[in-house]
Amino acid sequence: MQIDPHTLTPEATYRLLSGLVVPRPIAWISTLSPTGVVNLAPFSCFTFVSNKPPLLGVNVGRKAGRRKDTAAHIHSRGEYVVHIGDASQLNAIHESSEEHPEDVSEAELLGLATLPGETVAVPRLRDAPVAMECRLSQVIPFGETGAEFIVGEVTRFHLRDGLMNDGKVETMALDPVCRIGGPNYATLGRIVTLRRMQQTEKSVV
Image (cartoon, rainbow, N blue to C red; front, side):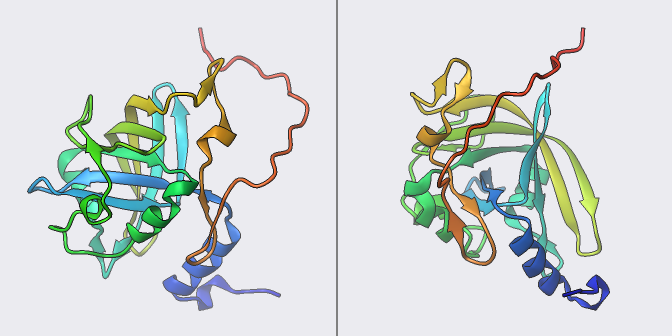
């Protein structure tokens, strides 16, 4: 089967790519509206882009040509919090993707408790196993539909007790969820451990 991308609408291309580029980790992002309402939404075009400083990148598209609330708030305040939710929070993660007016707090609507940020004004979710406070570093536009790759520097890591062992995250204890095509998600499933490869030190003297 061959598909000419020039024959596809943006929606059809999104459905194709989101079904092919799988599984994708989910950035569950909290922001603050101009009036102080806590906005919460999941984004699965998400990765880290640097280890020093620690930088996270997330792609945020537009709706009807307008920035989504998350992107608009990040542009306005320059601060946000990226959470990694676990399998017990899957329904809340999915439900937080529903569109609401800007003055509606998804966190409040879903009964998710928050705590004040330590280095940013944006609250974090109390019960998420991981929360990463971020300060906006740069925004890179891509494509013809107004998508933006938003890069933020992590200014504080919050990890649930028991997730770290000898400086490494215990992934099974984290129990993260991932996005696949459509309203479909997956959990870790079987983990295969292979031999460790020798790595050159990442530090530059």
